[in-house]
Image 1 (cartoon, rainbow, N blue to C red):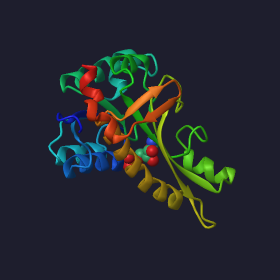
Image 2 (cartoon, rainbow, N blue to C red; image 1 turned 90 degrees about the horizontal axis):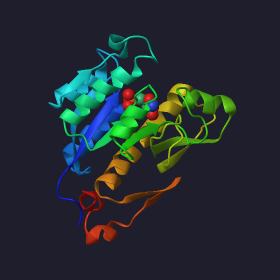
Image 3 (cartoon, protein in one colour; image 1 turned 90 degrees about the vertical axis):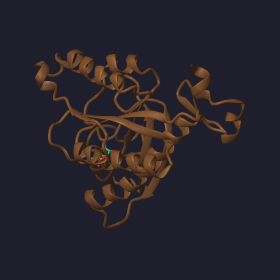
Image 4 (spheres, rainbow, N blue to C red; image 1 turned 60 degrees about the vertical axis):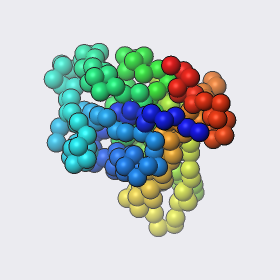
Length: 224
Ligand code: GRF
């Protein structure tokens, strides 16, 4: 038995939004027991905003420069983002190709409720050039990671990971494309696990609970 109420998901993006699309599709086809209630981008005019709008999801561009110089403007920028997310009743915040570090204000507004997708097997290759860094290092196995965000860069407790082989003739583009398929799959799966109350954070470890253990009642509901 899982929670009856769909999880209200907010998504933060910066670019083309294929991970957002995977989440929108997962909610639509029922593989995610949730609903994307709002999308916020730190960049104007990006494809991700169009993807949201085409599904009728409220979408907002909030460029940090409206609030001053980065990083001094971060508290005011995040205050505005939090206001939008709260106004739409967000329960889980998904960073899907969002290219900034989130600050304490957002983390405190959604404690243990912010997740991120990263195109590498963390803790290897954190940062914005993960696939190129993995290739340059010469690893034979790359992959993707979904994790709960904490104040460190790409360092929070890991929910799911999946590996992909690095092929002899891989370029950054071909490797990134293969990793991206994995990203879409594990992001969808991680959100579903959270929506069903099947994740429990124990220090650095995220326990994945059996689906049957929520028969006693959904963890998400009993938290309220
Ligand atoms: C993905 O590879 C994600 O892991 C990284 O940035 C990329 C965004 O892709 N953080 P998209 O915007 O979801 O298509």
